[in-house]
Image 1 (cartoon, rainbow, N blue to C red):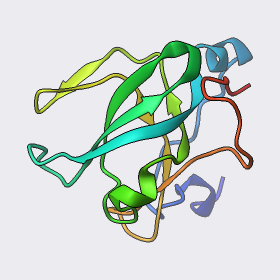
Image 2 (tube, helix red, strand yellow):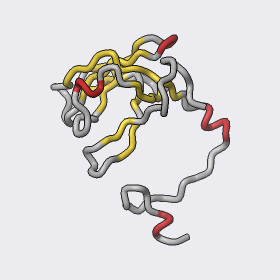
Image 3 (cartoon, rainbow, N blue to C red):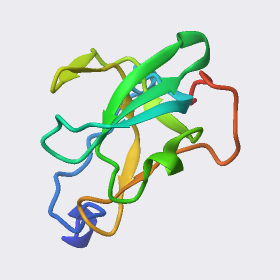
Image 4 (cartoon, helix red, strand yellow):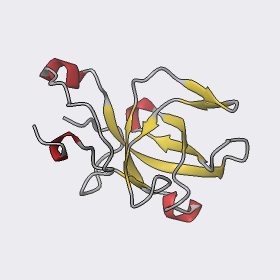
Length: 128
């Protein structure tokens, strides 16, 4: 394997990816949701937002997201995103983070590009 094939998309050296079984993938519950409320997360150490995400039948869940470099609050409101919904909830600077909003690295480490479906779907739909 060449050095180039061992590099991640950020250009840093990374370990080869271990194959998983399809059943392992099914353990990760990724759903579509719409951001219905956004607040600046002033207590966070790194610039972030507090998000409230409508996940359809799962209800509205909260998340802390470090996505301020590319997105303003108005850009996020009513935006549909993808999120992992079956991680154990965390408290970040006192705020409950119940889901993990998914993104990809942008041009810099601070830039996160949000993941979403190519077309709008019903909130709560699961990725398969």
